[in-house]
Amino acid sequence: MPTTVWRHEDVGNNQAAKREVISFNETDPFATPKPESLIQRALEIATNPGDLILDSFAGSGTTGAVAHKMGRRWIMVELGEHCHTHIIPRLTKVIDGEDKGGIIEAVGWKGGGGFRYYRLAPSLLEKDKWGNWVIHHDYNLHSAPIPREDLELNSPKKKILSAIDKTILWNFQCLQKFLLGRR
Ligand SMILES: C[S@@+](CC[C@H](N)C(=O)[O-])C[C@H]1O[C@@H](n2cnc3c(N)ncnc32)[C@H](O)[C@@H]1O
Image (cartoon, rainbow, N blue to C red; front, side):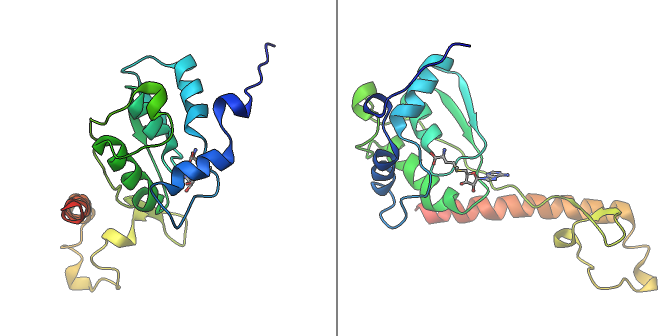
């Protein structure tokens, strides 16, 4: 099997990666950031300009920042609050041309482009205490026991429609909050 060694002089190291993160979040350099030059090497080998790159464990957003500067499209997914504390501030700086670190000199980055941000709603379904799949309690307007006379109103169809309405409302409210925060 062919092997290769990527030396830190060529592709950076964790200290360099932390310095890159500190440039957009002074208080939290993130525990395990990757240096931009390391991701650049991987993307040079495996992708072409315009390709779509997925990082479903985005962390501090290095993959998206590098992909963006290299003219690739990207999707990042993040479970934690890093999305707000690291990824959005980092990519905003990259787009506004205010990011002065990482691979900008290597690729001649000046800024440009954009991104869309979505917050996923909680799962529509969850298991109840008997192991049956039921509508997640976050969507269930009637989490208290349903009085007999309301049973017709709370038919499964009506509950699902209400759950879908709440999902749309949830996404709209998150987007609205994000857009207002950007002003
Ligand atoms: C090791 S870090 C990634 C570091 C990243 N490569 C960088 O350079 O900053 C892994 C990230 O995956 C996130 N994560 C873990 N499980 C996840 C999941 N199921 N969906 C989305 N993100 C997840 C964690 O919150 C953490 O931020």
